[in-house]
Amino acid sequence: MKFDNVLAERKNKVIYRDGDLAVKVFDESFPKSDILNEALNQARVEETGLNIPKIEEVTKIDGKWAIISTFVEGKTLQQLMDENPDKLDEYLELFVNVQMEILSKKCPLLKRLQDKMQSKISSTDLDATTRYELHTRLASMKRHDKVCHGDFNPSNIIITPDGTPFILDWSHATQGNGAADAARTYLLFCLKGEKELAEKYLKLFCEKTDTARQYVNAWMPIVAASQSVKGNPEEREFLLNWANVCDWQ
Image (cartoon, rainbow, N blue to C red):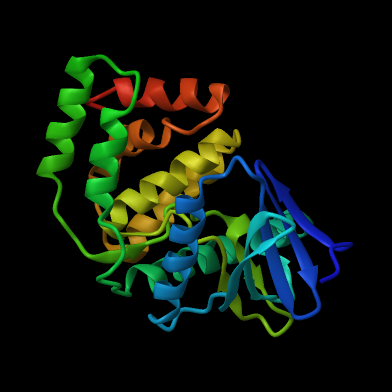
């Protein structure tokens, strides 16, 4: 394999292109169980019929674990948004449509979103009273079985030259409530300092899915707390501030 074409670099991993393949190589500090779980998630989501890169192989390269998938030619939706700000509304509409397509699918073998969040909330640095409030609120939420991406943002969508969207990065995929996934996307925009875009996104999502904004708001502290566990220090402070607002409106 030729590793001279770097597609992206992330914390603890590098993604290379090798012909028709994309090779995600993890460093030695990345837990093997997380790598194998990511590959399994991706393989399971493939079976839903969504447009995603296909898993070709899970292997070791120079002693490092790697996930090898089909390479998808195109630009990320984030790139297109940055290059064509006049088309932001059009791209945002596409973005929400793709998310709705994901949420229309079911994948019974994925981990349940609420189980994952219960565990994450227990692992936070929040005080016992706040953790209790978050656990109680989470338990009261309706249990759905929709496919939830878990990290749905414009950088994780590739638009091919013919306009077909492909969804990347299924490491956080679960089955659960779509409003929680929307809350996560809203917070991702906010973490980038794009509060106005976050509001625009959530308004459109609620309109197109006929979801009450208050219902998504109720998920915000839960999602913020669960996502704070592995965040960097700046993100953790932001997310934990949200998590402490247990009656967020």
